[in-house]
Structure formats: structure tokens, C-alpha cells
Image 1 (tube, rainbow over the protein chains, first blue to last red):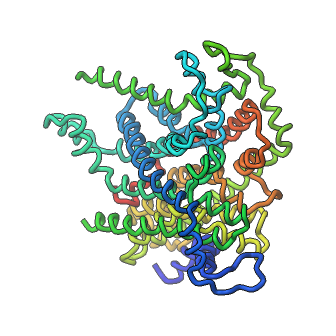
Image 2: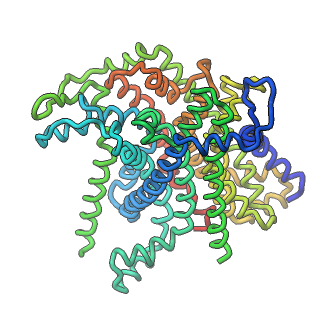
Length: 287
Length: 275
């Protein structure tokens, strides 16, 4: 391939990504060391003042803790449930494509619509929660999204409901592509279900699981839409996320530099996870 | 365990999963046609009868809803097409360059695909304001395309890298130029993968909230932004109307996924990872 060919092939993507992603991200990074905002007349160097403001803000501390819990709980759940459904669907089955399509539906619901939907499903007058409790003869419950202790687990459950089907969708082609003989060999060798999972299924899709984990971690770190409607970050700061914090600072309280800086802290978190991912993924490729 | 009993167990487990995952959507669909539970009676009862009036109430609660539906469709279609087109060229370039680090570069695109938009959307809004693209369709389309292009590069790279180079070599011997090779040799071989990638990107763009939320201020409005407006400005909707709006917003992507169902398994992250 000639140099001219490369220019033709890479230039359109380079323009798109530079103009609408990389350049804004880097300008944003520069701005975090200043008092810059779209409305300031004079830009002054501010050193690490923005970072100091954020790191000493208990609200950001709460958001960082919440997102750590969210990621550590939601990502494994999404992987396990998504893998489980894909495992059930891996072999031919009557109506398999219909099963697959129906089980992808939750992912087609936008995160914001999912927040709206669960807001009402947890509400007492017409919700599914109190309907079931009513049949069991139990009294109505307050929405768990409004409960200080239950709000974060609730937000996690809602997100797992939406994302696990996407994991199934991503895993299924690779799981079904494992040759039948490999399952048969394992079965003949007397492997139990756990044995087949550990010896056949997981090794075959390990690099793919790593890639999906990277995407899910990024998705979890950026959690915004679902929580915005479901809890708005509350009660108190029980479900506040760094993305809600950044948005609130930049566009709610007009504290643009703080918002841009905490946005960059999310980027730093994802890039750190990305560095680990690149290491693991390239080690695998060398093998 | 016999094969038949194993299959029965599988179907049973899958049916249980289906109930868990689809019950919330079924509840919403029932509410949208006016079939609502009444939890104040013991045991809870259902109110009815079924009606379609909640779908017309959407237009009363949000007069521009149908226009927003059109905006969402156009924005998502343009962004997905643009992202897939530019990614296809770049993925071909990556897959066919001798450049030794290309696998690492491709994995780098996956990290970029994982980066939440919140990480850079605040300065992006400032950049777009300066170039007068804030609150324009072009601004939204280009930004959404940039968010999703890295994922498209990763998937398309994996598909192209698996193709044998013999077709291209034959075409080059026949005197085909670069664009002819890409357009007449590679693209026809990968039409299902390209279609699957475009559909997945369309779904991602259609459902995207943060990017259009921050980059628009009323002139251009997509469905997710309209939904967030309703709740953040405390104009809380009635549940049946909200449910109807939810079903309408889910409709186009569900139809699209249904139509392209046969090729969707070509959207594979596996090839890029070497799985």
C-alpha cells in the first residue's frame, strides 16, 4: 500500500475523530489547568486548583465511591447473566432466532427510556412491584429508587436489565462457533457443566470476554442517562455519578471549569482501565 | 441426562429469562393501550378498556413529538452511515498495512470506543459553539458519528483482516485502483457485516442522550432529549402517555433489528480480538 493510499483511507476518519473527539478532549484537558469557561473574558492559569476543588468536594467523593461500587457490581453481573443466556442459546433450538431477538429487546430501550419506565414500574399506583406485593397480601412499598440504602442497588439492577442482553448478543456468535466435537470430547471425558464451562467455553471466548469487559467498564464509568430520571443522583448523593456531577457543575451551577475537569477525571479512569486492557490484550496476541 | 430432557431444561430456563427480561416491557405495552393495574384494591385489579387514545395524547403533551421522531431518525441514519463509511476505509487501511503495531492500534480504537462521551462533551460543546455548529443537525450528526466510529473501526477491521487477499490481488492485476478495490471487491464480500454494524450504530445513535442534550438547545431535538426534558423540568407525564411514547420510541429500532436479524450476528468483536 502506497503512502497516497494511506492518506486516502485514513484522512476521513482522522478528520472526524480529531475535530469531534480528540481536539475537544485535549482542549478540555488544557482548560482544566485554567479558569477558562465560554463566558470568561480573561483566561488565567490556575494550576491544579480545579482538581483540588473537586477532590476536596464531598459530593465528588460520593460520586466516585458510587461509581466504583456500580462498576464492581454491575459489570460482573452483566457478564455472568449475559454469558448464561448466550450459553443456553448456543446450540440449535427451535425458534432460536426469535428467542435471540426477543432477548435483545431490553438493549433496544434507550437508557433514558429505561429510567422513565422503571420510575413508573417502581411507583406504587400502577407499578409492577406493588402489584405483585398486593397479590401476596403485602402492603405497598415506597419505590426502592427513593430509599437511601436501596437506591444504588436499584440503579444497578436497572442497568443490568438493559446491558446483559447486549452481552448475550456479543457473545453468542463466538459461543455457537465452538466446534461441536470440543463439547463432545469434554462430555466423553466426563466433564460436568462446570468442567465444560472452564475447559471449553471460557477459554474459547476469553479474549472476547476481555474486550466486552472493557466496553462495559467504560459504559459503567459514564453512567448518566438511567440515573438522571430514576433518581436524579439522589436521595442525597446515594446514586450521584461522576457524569451527573460533571453535567450538573458545567450546565447546572455554571461552574464550567469544575465540570470539564471532573469530565477529564472520568476519562482518566477509563484510560487507566484501557492501559490494563491493552496490556492484557496484546500479551494474548503474542501467545 | 438424556438429550431431550436437557433440551426441555434449556427451554424452561430460557422461558424464565424471557419473562424476567420482557415483563417490564409487556407492562409498558399494556399501559400504553390503557390496560393498567389498580394496586389500591385487594387483590390488585386491572382497569381498562383497551384504547389507542394515549398515543394521540403524546402529541398533546409534546406537540413536536412527531417532528422529534423524524429528527431522531434522520440524525441516527446520517450518523451511522457516516461513521460506517469513514471507518470502513480506515479499517481496510489498518488491516492491509504492513505496519507491525496495527493490532495494538486496533485495540486502541476499542479503548476509544469505551470512553464515555461525558469525558469530552463539555469542551466539545464549546468548540461547536465557536464554529457555529451548536444546535444544528450537522453538529449532532458529526458528533454522534465520532462517538461511535471507533467501535465500527474495531468490528470492520476484524472482518477485513479475516478476508484472504487473493481477491484484491486479482483485482489489482486487472488494473483496479484503490477505491475500486475497496468499493467493488471488499465491500460486496462484507455487505452483511457492514449492514450489521450500521444497524448497531443506528441503535446507539438513536438512544444517545448526552451528546444531543449538550449540543442542542431546542432548535434540534431528538426523542431522548425530549424525554429528559419532561422529567427534569417537572412536567411529569401521565404513565399511560409516557408508556405510549416509550413504545413509539422503541418501535423503529425494534423493526430495524427485526428486518436485519439474519445478518446481525456478523457484528462481531471476536475477529478483532482474535477469538
